[in-house]
Image (cartoon, rainbow, N blue to C red; front, top):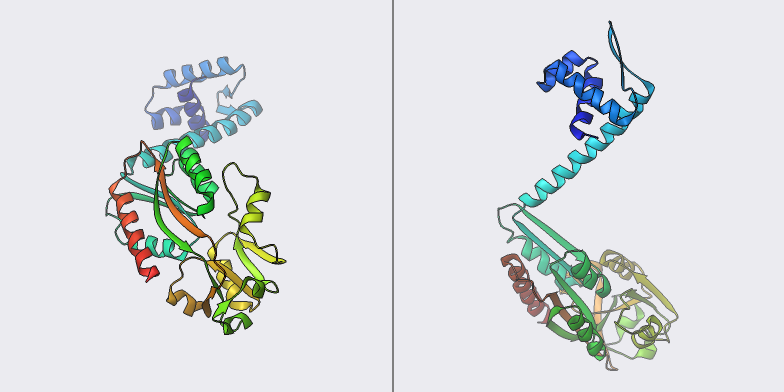
Length: 307
């Protein structure tokens, strides 16, 4: 079946006349009639009934014209999508953990976007999805966060999948909570002090080659009986600001965010493991100027938050 002949049939149906369609298509009427006959012969149906009064679409023809319009519309959509995609000269994509200094850095980075056509993709997600975005979804950069005790599992996975990796920062989690939370009266908190409160946590429990139950036992305090898992940062701050029984382990949170939501930071006396934020990209990938700009902005934000 000739797609061009399909377009001719749709034009005739819209015009209600072969004469009008031939004028609109700039095709001689005999040639247009011949194309429709070839199409009808290929399909084994009669699309148009011809009479001295003109043409009329048959029931089979009506069905075919409906399908043809859908197919042609999809073809136009695909053509538009790819032509515009290839016209974009600059593209930047990154997956990051759900952390304040990442979003702060991204906001600063957005002020440096060039005037040329540019597409930016910023995805806050967990470590597994960040890795898959690079390997399967054509993302250029990814940042994963994990405890240093799992370092060998992650670096082995990076090497196996041909990923370059660079440690951006190392830190220990601190606690944040509502300023009116009873825990906020303590400058130093022990793990046993948390057991009657509700932990807000991100569902990022992934370590390569380890079963989830093992990771949960390592990462989550078994003495905490109430826990809410969230998947984006807005919910965590709403919960912490409205529920004085909640707390959360966090990395770097600026004073302006604490003030906005009425939160405070407190230290845990018992030592928590060191965590790493690690930058990833494919070994064969050459960093673009946009990539370098974002990484530099990220490092500046990290230093600002650590102070």
